Length: 247
Image 1 (cartoon, rainbow, N blue to C red):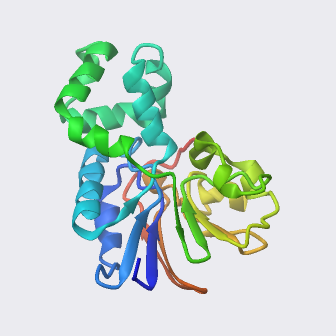
Image 2 (image 1 turned 90 degrees about the vertical axis):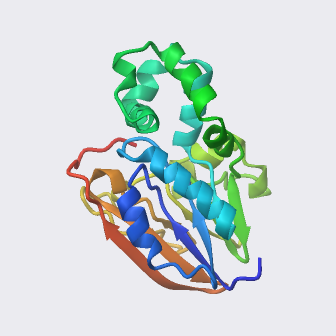
C-alpha cells in the first residue's frame, strides 16, 4: 500500500447517515480507508451500510474487516431456528428488515426468511463471508475486537478472538511492538463511565478503541494515523434516540 495515511472508522451498526458525514473527512487520493467491522445490526440501515462498504472496497480499495455481528448474521443463516432468539435480540431484526425493507419476520418463520436472504442477497452475503480478520500496516494493526497477547505471535490468534475478545486483550500486556486500533467494546465500558463515548486510549497508548456506540446515542469515530503518529480524530454524533446498549 503506497498511501501514507490510514483513516479507520469504528463500529457503524447501520448508521448510514453518520457514516456518510464522517466520509466527508476522508481523502481517497491520499488515505487508505479501513472499516473495523460491525457494519450491521442494531441501527436501521444495515443493508445500506453494507452496500456502501462494498462500493468503497470496489472503487477505492477500502479494507472492510469482519466484526462479530457479521459473523452472527452468517451463523444465524446456517441455523435460523436455533439461533433466532439470540440473533434477533442482538439487533438482527433491524438488519433483516433493512434487507427486505419491511417487517418480514412477523410474516414468515426464520427458516424461510433465511432461505430468502440467501437467494436474494447472494452478493452481499458473499461479501461478508470474504472479510479479512485484521489489517496490518506499518506498526499498526487494525482489528475488530483485538488479539491474543499471550501468544508468541499475535497472528496465531484464533479466528473467533479477532472479532470477540475483550478483557484479556484490553488489560493484557502488549509486547508486540504494534499499536492496535479496534472497536467491538463501547468506549464507555473502557472509560468505566456511563455515557462517556469518546475515543479510549490504553495507559500504555498502544491500544486505541474507537467504538463510540454509534447506534445508541454515542458517536461514530474515525482516526487518521501516519507511520509514527496520530494525525487527527473525527467524531460524528449519533442521530439515534436510544441510549441503551448491550455489548
